[in-house]
Image (cartoon, rainbow, N blue to C red):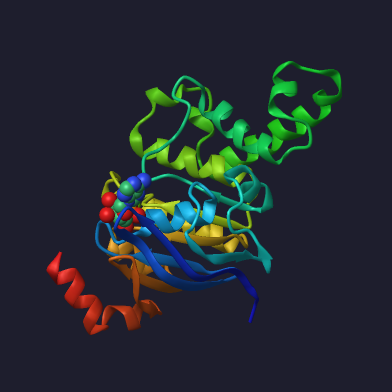
Length: 253
Ligand SMILES: Nc1ncnc2c1ncn2[C@@H]1O[C@H](COP(=O)(O)OP(=O)(O)O)[C@@H](O)[C@H]1O
Ligand SMILES: [Mg+2]
């Protein structure tokens, strides 16, 4: 059995009078796909935002490999090895697929993105090796054919994939995906499921928020159910599927 990569303890966050994340405790084991499901407004995205540093908790703690990361800024969290995608994709539309992924890869590299854009001499060798690693990532994700297309010109399903590629380019230990199947057709969703499985098999732990329940049931090792900010249930897909409280929440939706 491998170790715990992420530990969340009694996490709380309110917006005005609304308790969006209500005393949630969760641990994620290294090398697994852990999914978070729950009705709209359950607090899933807020929970992600708290972990990635996009917002701060009112109370509670987040540990990554035992290190307290509570309240760190997004770039600090990313530098430690946690990368994410957003419910609405955040690609640079007027940059190419390749350039978008290079931005991700540069978060990881020693010399900064700006100095490499300026072509400063010390960066040239590193630049070449970055290009090589991005090209092999593109190859692996079947995106080579569109690497020079502007992101605004590629179909939505591919944009989602490019966003995942950009997060992967940072070589995270933990990849967080917020509703990656939203807006995808059934073929794209199947392919996405295979891709997420491949990412896990490469040793990257995946935390997945997803509305497509059959995708979640197919690929998850463990599932947590959130409802009105609170943890309603947690367990293996088979256990969640027959949990009476979970069924009630979903039939009510
Ligand atoms: N920045 C914010 N300001 C005010 N309310 C927010 C904010 N972000 C989320 N909420 C509220 O918190 C609740 C949980 O939202 P969210 O985390 O987006 O849910 P989910 O991702 O599960 O659909 C919702 O009622 C939402 O309206
Ligand atoms: Mg959401």
